[in-house]
Image (cartoon, rainbow, N blue to C red; front, side):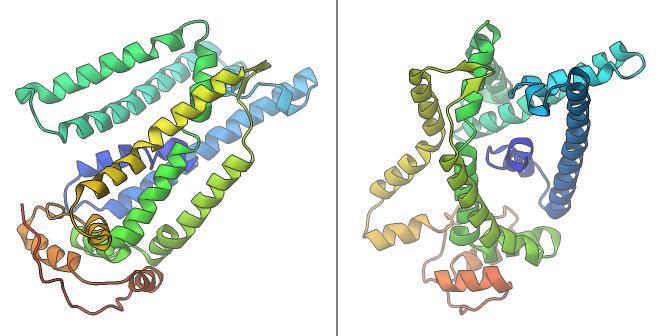
Amino acid sequence: MAFYSLGPGWGGVMMMGSHSKFHNNCLRDVFISIVGDASFALFSSFVLFAVIGVMAAEIGVPVEDVVNSGMSIGLVGYSRAFTYLPAPYVWAVLFFFSVTMVGLDAETVCTETVVSFLEGFGKRLGRHSHLLSVLLICLITFLLNLPFCTQAGPYMFQLVDWYLPTWSVVIIALLQVITMMWLYGGDRLDYGIRDMIGRKMPHVFRIAASFLSPMLLLLLLSISFVKYRPPKYGSYVYPEYTRVIGWILSCSVVLPIPLFMIWKFCYLQGTFKEKLNLLTRPTGDWGPSDSAYRLDYLKRVQTKRSLADQAYYNLTGRLRYSAKHHCETLPMS
């Protein structure tokens, strides 16, 4: 539920957070988002499965035989629930209108994430670059999604949904949490949050991000591979070649990450250790734009600490390494 509703591995959360003010209370926003998302999801689940249970009792079949798995379960369940209410057509109109708004909202976040990524390569389209980028992305995604509107669309959608987000989002989230808490460092993240809101992250957040999340993600990933089963849509079983297509789609999302790491490693000059040290610390142009916070941040970036020091801080929230800094200074931009 956390991956598919909050979407921490798809970049949308980071994109929206990047538009916040420097001193915005990000911890408060995180707490409100998680509680709100979980509450709405649980409420929707209670309504949906209660209706499915009533439908199963009415027709005298087991619950698992009422609605086939897939994208139809929510639409069929809620559509049936409206028949038990007064003025069912009014509720149906409101429901499908809300579903449309949710879809547009999700599409806006995804589109802005891609546009923000593309705009990072430079602004060559002039002052209307953002609008032109949005229109271009919308046109491309519209053309790519036309096959899903055909009679074979539900089958293609089920195949893509079965493979594309299943493992890739877990792997991306695992790499993100390891990078932030162990390579970038929980200490740097803590002091960055303190600069923004005046306090460090709660101790339980740091423990969860450093130790619990990587273990649970690895466990979830292992279970996903062990319990893997070929896709199906209702009673339709997909042929063998579609599974190859599915695995190619799944790998296409994750494969650029190690390829880019290998390319960056081969591009740099120096010994293996020098390359590794350079690639596992922030670049000189990373940090707060406010000069009042940037100087202190750059000093912390240059602080020497080992993996054991980082593990000690992630566990206790206290520094164990010395305050010695590297001799070189990072460039300011």
